[in-house]
Image (tube, rainbow, N blue to C red; front, side):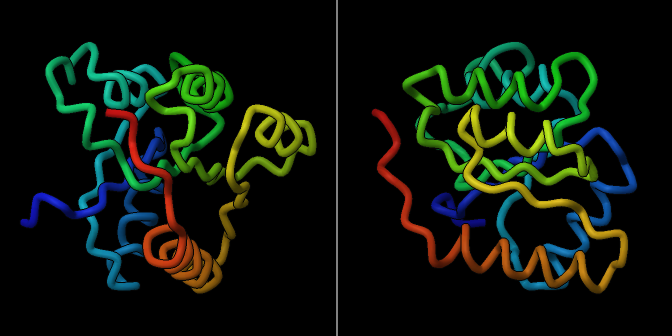
Length: 149
């Protein structure tokens, strides 16, 4: 595996949604390395190289964070708040990928600095298309700022 491969951090506590998202990425030929964090604490540990990820090279951050809102331990909105409050991750692309259709979640996500908010479609074909477009935009077309050294 190439060391310059763009990483996707998938923050998802539901095993079915995790499997579905990975399957949709793979079926759309999005072959990036996928790191899965199953709660907010694990996501923050990965991003900031703490806890079980202590010693991880923080110079190699994910190209994209796919973040669920409803997470155990620390919810997705708090994870987003912490990402945006740290110079090392402030510009990190974060896409909220959730089943929540609550207007307050949409508003809070954007107020906290989410780059995009996507509701998970219930239909697999719609979900496949949403993931295809997401991958094309965020992993191919989008230009990200250099990571702080």
